[in-house]
Length: 419
Ligand SMILES: *[C@@H]1O[C@H](CO)[C@@H](O)[C@H](O)[C@H]1NC(C)=O
Ligand SMILES: *[C@@H]1O[C@H](CO)[C@@H](O)[C@H](O)[C@H]1NC(C)=O
Ligand SMILES: *[C@@H]1O[C@H](CO)[C@@H](O)[C@H](O)[C@H]1NC(C)=O
Image 1 (cartoon, rainbow, N blue to C red):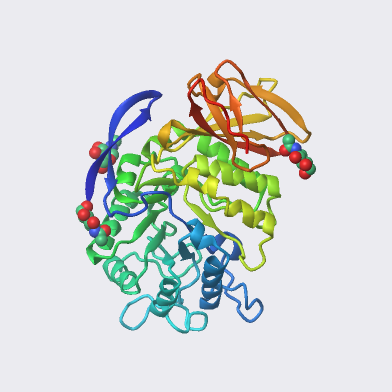
Image 2 (cartoon, rainbow, N blue to C red):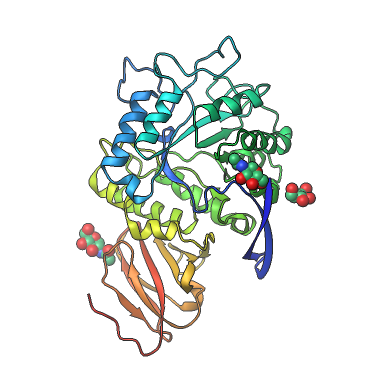
């Protein structure tokens, strides 16, 4: 199942050469990007009351159409994944999983074919337990049959939740289901909720084992449609970054959950913060929004190619929060930094204050080598500028905002092209 992949990682604060054994199915070499139904559409199964919002093949087809026609696929959003509530309450007479016949009348294979005909990949949700979190049939006791059934529908991505089972079994159960997926012969991204269930039960996940068996894994509670939830998730990721970040890399990623961007819970500036931090975190980028009604300023954030390029950087190194000081006069700021290929850095300065402000950070505070950099503002507010080795980074910001720069090392005698 596994093959060693050697990477330079920060382990316990020291730069050392570590070997991470990683799941070797050739998938998710950069963080998966796509769309997931849960945050926006949840478990809405009432197609009579809400025909355009219920979990149904119509929702998936119209979203697939929009992912292509509105440029999301071209920007990298590839997987369209149905979360919980697609199943019928009962298995078929042959014991197989059956999609709800009213909402998925054509069946899952036909829906997968439709998704594939658009050039997209097809994802689906299941649960390791006796039933899913919303009470539909889970895979427990039917593991091999279900792995085979899902593969026979040409599923490309499985989000395997962990409600309604004994958490103590998960260290065996998740690897075992991964083995069954592998045995189907179909390359399927394996998204696990395993570490989340251990973390919430105060049982230390073995992230070495998780990275060996899963392509992506949920680390903490579901994100919700609010700024408070995004900030809470960011702070949880930062508080646990020394434990988690070393395990991210090509083929295996920490998943802080979906992008809230485009829904009612975030302003434009708050949405910019989430996109920047998810790029720094090398997080999967799963939109969860109605693509038919999303406003253009949010769409532009989701489609920002420079920020997607940071997220998808081939070095695959998860970034860290490098500055957050409760007792500093700059306590309303956080600095997040990610090392990129070609010796570049992505740096996000998040400001939680409510009023326009100006401030600065030194190279040391940004945790970057003291040299000259060309700064590209990834949200295109500023024009390119140079930060010299002996200067501090100065900036001004509006209330609740992010400055997101790419720092490109410059030789000392380089003149900056004014564009
Ligand atoms: C199954 O696992 C083997 C060994 O790690 C790997 O080479 C192969 O690509 C995997 N196949 C699939 C379909 O995941
Ligand atoms: C964690 O998992 C790895 C890989 O499966 C294993 O070698 C190691 O012994 C485990 N560590 C603990 C503390 O169980
Ligand atoms: C602050 O907001 C105003 C109005 O939206 C905008 O024109 C200006 O560029 C912003 N300033 C900064 C520093 O982002």
